[in-house]
Amino acid sequence: MLCVDVNDQNCVEKLKNELKKVLNNKKIVVLCIGSDKVVGDSLGPAIGTRLIDGLQTDVIVYGSLQTNVNAKNLLLVKDMIKVLHPDRTLLCIDAALGVTSEVGTIQIYDHGLYPGSATNKNLPCIGDLSIVGVVNHKMHAFELSMLYTAKFNLINNMAQAISCAILSCLNQK
Image (cartoon, rainbow, N blue to C red; front, side, top):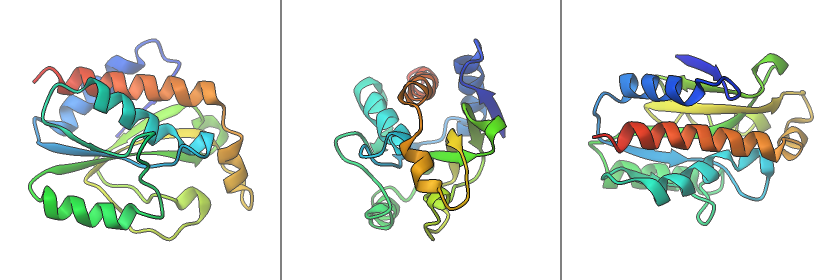
């Protein structure tokens, strides 16, 4: 696992190096989870749009600002990915709420994630690998409002760093 602050001057390089290790030349599908209707939840779709515009490889991307993958359609998309791309590794990207000291960090895990857990949605774990951007702190009973009050500049900086790292890593193949 890697945890790096988006304001770290070496953020993109650290993310790229970790992604090279965990992706290890695997064929992947990238699932960018979230909604463009809520600033704090738009991290995944913003990354998806940047990846679709910049990838030069056979990587498949689901979820963008134009076509959101969120709690309403996530299980359908997950099943579709299993059928259409059974031999590929699933990399999931989502926004998260965390403790105050984690806000602004980008975390890479060698396991899936539980989308919607910040807003108490009961969705299954999804993915083989995951990238999470902590966009605000968690306040019990106010989780949804914390996604609404996330700062756009933070979301934009995280989306830029994550997409640059992924594009740099994958377009080198």
